Image 1 (cartoon, rainbow, N blue to C red):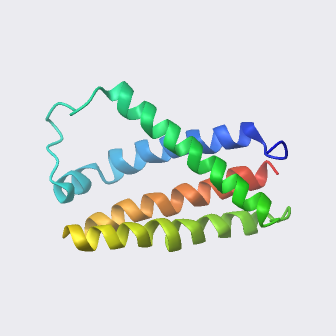
Image 2 (image 1 turned 45 degrees about the vertical axis):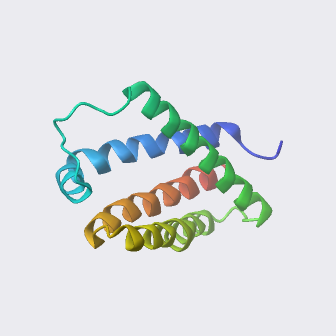
Length: 134
């Protein structure tokens, strides 16, 4: 655990928020709301501080887990390996898990593309930040 760079892990978790702000804001907000059946003008179901707090803790745990994976796999100093690992984790684990849930929930392919795309880029960013800070 001491071999992990905690500043890189926190920076990676913060990057998920920056990406999410762009992804679910100006880039895909309208399409996501339409596909998810969310009224963008409706008040939030819970306090935004609670939502963002839970999301940050989850992003921090995910970044920590990803850093552990890179460490356990002994991913070397080549940055492309950590970014590639991030894309692979985002696509093969996260996006495909979402695909299973979305298929059974009857959610649209478009919603899956938006949500899965975010998480593939999220883990690619984790790889970029943690790998560059290696």
